[in-house]
Amino acid sequence: MTKKYFGTDGIRGKVGEHPITADFFLKLGWAAGRVFANEGHGFVLVGKDTRISGYMFESALEAGLTAAGVGTRLLGPMPTPGIAYLTRTLRAQAGIVISASHNPYYDNGVKFFSVQGTKLPDEIEQKIEEYIDSPMTTVESSKLGKAKRLVDAPGRYIEFCKASVPTRLDFSGMRIIIDCAHGATYHIAPHVFSEVGAEVVTIGAEPDGLNINDECGATKPEKLAATVLSYRADLGIALDGDGDRLVMVDHKGEIVDGDELIYIIAKARLAAGLMSGPVVGTLMTNLGMEHGLKKLGLKLLRANVGDRYVMEMLTEHKGILGGENSGHIICLDRTTTGDGIIAALQIMAEMQDSGKNLHELKSGMQKYPQVLVNVKVDKKIDPDEDEAIQKTVKAIEKKLGDNGRVLLRASGTEPLIRVMVEGQQEDLVKNYAHQIADDVKKVMGA
Image 1 (cartoon, rainbow, N blue to C red):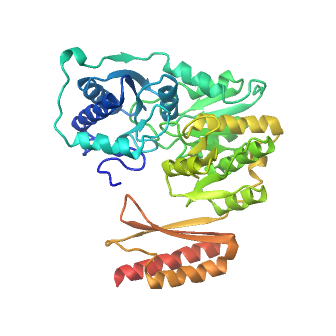
Image 2: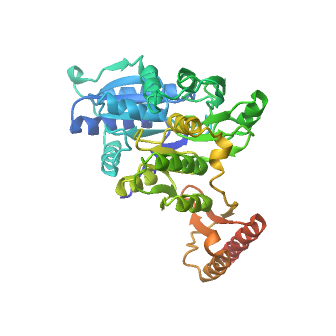
Image 3: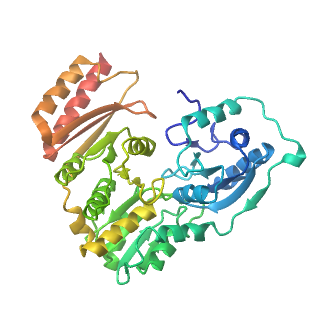
């Protein structure tokens, strides 16, 4: 099903450039409103992160929904997973998130949640697109939607997060550093972790509309690592701008990525007899995680890159745990979407239950060196179909055996061929990656 506007995670781009404009969001709000009005009666939640353009797009969506005759509940700054949770528990027809996630402030976007707190089905997105490309009308005045502000949204979500770990656990004496990326968790994450008893030091919690994800958060955890060491903290928690990604730092200042965190949660669930189905990763999931899970007797399935595809595979195979090395971690036994705060709480719970620190917990999985080389292309080529490239790939795969992996894929957003090689020896992996990249360049030259 080909879509004109929606990508794998909603609609996203640079503010002021189509479709990330006020007039498009007005039309999008109206189009979504028409679809939701046809599906039934009710209201739509609208939340946002902290980037400055959120004010403009919030107003535009509200006006469009109102014109379509749909009521709106405005949440203000809220993490993406918080909006998913509230959409479900308030029985809203849908939830709309105004956010560009981990992108800089000058980008923005929008994504939708269904009443179940999951991403909208493709069919609904297709219907919205059909309305976007049709003339906009306004319902008669007596049927216009009304907008209200939901003032207790943060408190509701804070309590939900806290309830994801047993009340028997006592986190007092645990010192943690939280980096909120100057994003949507700035007024929520510090409360969650302090209210479960931890001693909290917060950084990246002073949003000004322009500093979201700026040299901080899950995509830039180096400042967090330095802060953990300076405070002699037990761990660090780095969230991204909309709160659906998590990267952690152990007491030694070492960064712990999504693959390692998923492994820790999987091992904990298995030990507690609560694991169900396979773990779902992506094509980029480290081979070390696959081998680590295999030793535990757990199977790893690989989805295409993107949490939407991870969720689809989890649902299909009745799994409860999956995610990406970038920090999207989905615990379906706790919530319906990737949630950085809830994932961090699961790790802290395992630290308390096991009596081990984060550095010890991650040691059960040995990450393999992974090298990624991006090759710019000026024409469309399929590396899987080129004989010369595939000859090199097969030769390298034979040398790597079961202890390595080669992946070639075309970027979905840029004119690039991504060459990824991983294995046990970093120098060899680098040489192999550049060897394949050189073959791709030769094909381009030919």
